[in-house]
Length: 345
Ligand code: NCD
Ligand code: ZN
Image 1 (cartoon, helix red, strand yellow):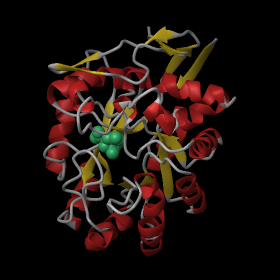
Image 2: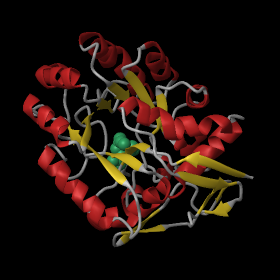
Image 3: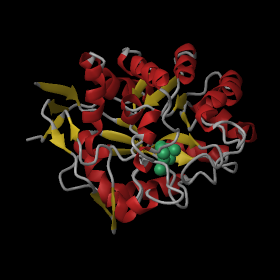
Image 4: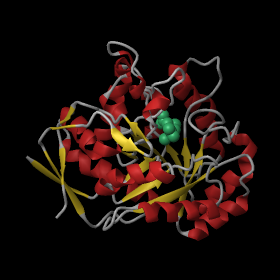
């Protein structure tokens, strides 16, 4: 069986930099037309000038013949001035601003402790319709790690939504039924991305026969009830839910460690893994809208012109993939993926 889709886009992706960028970019460019590229480099991409320079490094690292457009983002800090927002919109290559609660995840130390500290910058984004992408977790040590998204929605997102009703918001990598409900109820300027790993795994994957560092990401996997809510949202045909892999490569040694990094690498089989999740839900017919239409429509960009073809033929994912001077362990390492990308002619 084959499945032909409008070429999809990835609305949340970590490409890293340097040798790591060169190692992973081809996986994404083989599948996706565009990707919203996360700015959590060291140091973070906080200005239009840094975003333009990063974009040039991505374009230079593309495999020959690849047609792929990186859509850049700015890393919001407590010192991002409103004029940087105006410059971002003028630049034509910056498509969103990323909000990391300070300390919430990998390279989030420069993030914002409280959005109430950056009101003038958010007002500029609201006025200019530049989307704010939210890592939606509170960071308080006294909030249970599995509740941090739900508490963020209650304490931070609902008041933010009320205070800036015209601000375009994307709640990224949603993991809970509560986040899905919030997005459903929030009107046309609020959307969410959903990862393949949160559609396919619940939190048992973290403890399958032992502690599994390669299943650790943020927001952390949740219980089965939440996974089912995500599947319903992704496969429901609702236009404000769309594909964002959050593919987040880390060297194997950094994950298999006393204090392992958060992030799961899925770019090597991204659309194929989503196809599995949609097939399991009996909704392969809704994959194209989720993967190739809804995100472009939300961002006000044209849908891609070309197509990709998937074939229902299982293949085995390598145990490791090269990653700069190290290696990484991809999702499904050493196991099979049911769908295969047919190389384009
Ligand atoms: C991301 C990373 O490694 O950059 N990790 C992750 O677990 N998703 C950061 C992020 O998006 O939270
Ligand atoms: Zn991410």
